[in-house]
Image 1 (cartoon, rainbow, N blue to C red):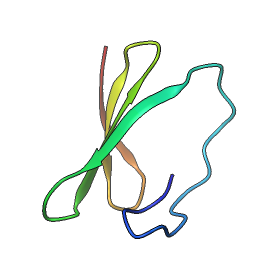
Image 2: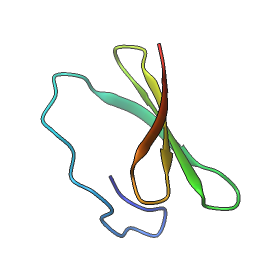
Image 3: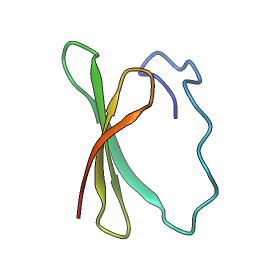
Image 4: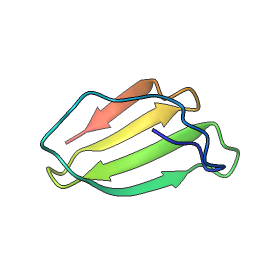
Length: 54
Protein backbone atom coordinates (compact mmCIF):
# COMPACT_ATOMS: atom_id res chain seq x y z
CA UNK A 1 0.00 0.00 0.00
CA UNK A 2 1.23 3.48 -0.85
CA UNK A 3 0.69 6.83 0.85
CA UNK A 4 -0.89 9.74 -0.99
CA UNK A 5 2.62 11.19 -1.32
CA UNK A 6 3.97 8.01 -2.95
CA UNK A 7 5.70 6.44 0.07
CA UNK A 8 5.47 2.64 0.39
CA UNK A 9 3.58 1.93 3.62
CA UNK A 10 3.16 -1.82 3.49
CA UNK A 11 3.44 -4.81 1.22
CA UNK A 12 0.32 -6.92 1.04
CA UNK A 13 -0.19 -10.62 0.49
CA UNK A 14 -0.76 -11.96 -3.00
CA UNK A 15 -4.42 -12.13 -3.94
CA UNK A 16 -6.58 -12.83 -6.98
CA UNK A 17 -8.70 -9.75 -6.16
CA UNK A 18 -8.11 -6.48 -8.01
CA UNK A 19 -7.99 -3.03 -6.45
CA UNK A 20 -10.65 -0.80 -8.02
CA UNK A 21 -10.25 2.39 -6.05
CA UNK A 22 -8.40 4.13 -3.27
CA UNK A 23 -8.94 7.38 -1.41
CA UNK A 24 -7.53 9.13 1.64
CA UNK A 25 -9.42 10.97 4.36
CA UNK A 26 -8.90 14.75 4.27
CA UNK A 27 -6.79 14.61 7.45
CA UNK A 28 -4.64 11.75 6.07
CA UNK A 29 -5.43 9.41 8.99
CA UNK A 30 -7.38 6.84 6.97
CA UNK A 31 -7.22 5.11 3.60
CA UNK A 32 -10.23 3.43 1.97
CA UNK A 33 -9.85 0.81 -0.76
CA UNK A 34 -12.44 -0.98 -2.88
CA UNK A 35 -11.92 -4.18 -4.85
CA UNK A 36 -13.32 -6.19 -7.74
CA UNK A 37 -14.76 -8.71 -5.25
CA UNK A 38 -16.78 -5.90 -3.63
CA UNK A 39 -14.70 -5.50 -0.49
CA UNK A 40 -14.31 -2.05 1.01
CA UNK A 41 -11.48 -1.85 3.53
CA UNK A 42 -10.69 1.03 5.86
CA UNK A 43 -7.01 1.29 6.83
CA UNK A 44 -5.15 3.50 9.27
CA UNK A 45 -2.27 5.66 8.04
CA UNK A 46 0.18 2.80 8.81
CA UNK A 47 -1.72 0.42 6.48
CA UNK A 48 -3.31 -1.60 9.29
CA UNK A 49 -6.79 -2.83 8.39
CA UNK A 50 -9.41 -1.29 10.70
CA UNK A 51 -12.66 -2.52 9.18
CA UNK A 52 -13.83 -4.53 6.17
CA UNK A 53 -17.24 -4.13 4.56
CA UNK A 54 -18.65 -6.72 2.15
